[in-house]
Length: 360
Image 1: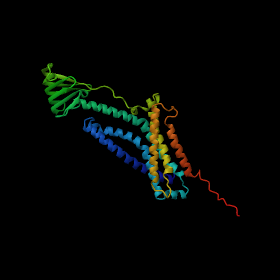
Image 2: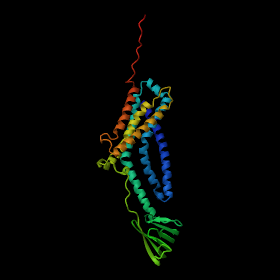
Image 3: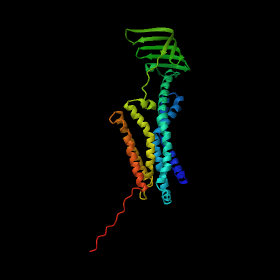
Image 4: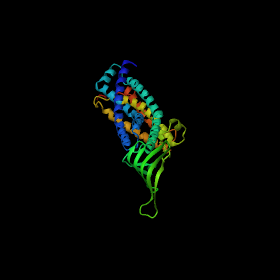
């Protein structure tokens, strides 16, 4: 790249980096609060918090990259326009066409990276998050029981309370199963086993079965009793966002095709929006220095809302396969091309020729 192209590239690159960082801080801050809330309620182990946050970061990065790049390029060009640097470059022969090179390079690099995230890493991150949450739920159910706290075990069917707890050892154990009307009280208990075969061994207690006040009520004392801990082993239904891209390519399901086109739409949107920022980044002297940023945000909102609508149509099979969501990208690409051509001066208004009336 020439010196001018490197200078423009550096400005828009750092502007994009700042905008994307701010957006990630905002969205990840909210996600951080939600993840800490899950850890505080024992829905997620504390050692898995940063793992989940790291995987969520990859998903948010792919999601926010298009708007981050658009705003970054617009802000970078707006600063150059504010300082009259674009006017000085145009006077030196570096017109709007010279902006396409550095902006296009940044768009291509960003599209390649985000395409890898959208097609490969984001689905893998979604699968990993599901696995972490599933394993976390098992660890919570089979984990160390907290003292002086009611804990749901056996997939919520049984409630356990222990007066004191030390590792796997429990003192003053109270267990109640609502569905079977069984209540057990024991002096102490111990968790035995690991993985899928885990049980709770109770010592010196009493087992009550039935509803108090009714004739069928039984109780029995015991020295040792084993209570198996049963987990809900049903596999959760995987979200379509966690399915690998290779499987989507082989699937004839319209929902799978819509998800595949959506993943491809992210890097494609980066390319189109980055080029769209070139004509939007130059404002006339009568306009505000950042007036075009609002227009860029409006175009982005319309673009992605229309893209979401087209995705729903594809999922429901309302449009042919060859149409899909591609027509939305085609419309924005055509608008971008028209704006670039008009700004380059290829399409210019013909000068008005004055018409002189004949002298009388």
